[in-house]
Image (cartoon, rainbow, N blue to C red; front, side, top):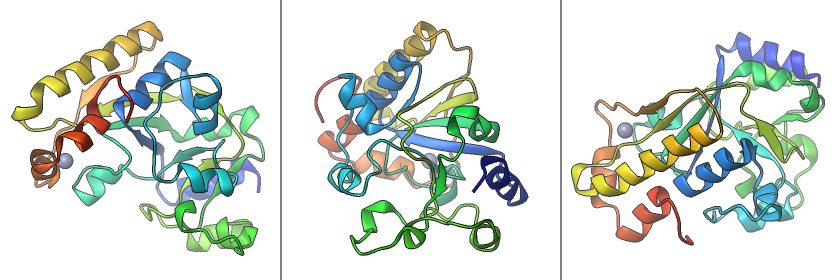
Length: 226
Ligand SMILES: [Zn+2]
């Protein structure tokens, strides 16, 4: 499928931005690299990342060198923290039109962590425009927009970064995360806003409030091995 045709279908479904959520440690590595990186790219360039339970399957299913995006801000949509982390990178949809992404854009039909080895390509991804046009649903979390075998994409189309704000008792962890991201943006010479998420009627406050120290560190710490 041609990238401009995919983008047209996404626009038709009211997608104008694409989103990538991650932990603070991994996000700092993106800023250091100057762009979004695949898990493999981070490994090969010795950039710190938080391990994900999907890493092993990702390698098996050949998506370890892919970039992943959602068509909505999942935290905003489900009113609780995004599983992948409290830092949200928001990109203009136009980024998918970059020349180096030609023939690299694939939209999954299910999350690769549920893929079985016997699934064929067209069970994993949309393989024709007609089907994509009919079955794509904005906000369907399993339909992930991926750049396949693209280890790195620069921040030319990055519009903003949003950081979750945990409750007061974790304020020091939050403050350090905010500061590190702010500094990372400056060092990367990016003039995009770093916004603090504003939540209403959201379960994130309670979830962060009751979260164990390890989980919280995994999401918000600026260094260490998690
Ligand atoms: Zn929230």
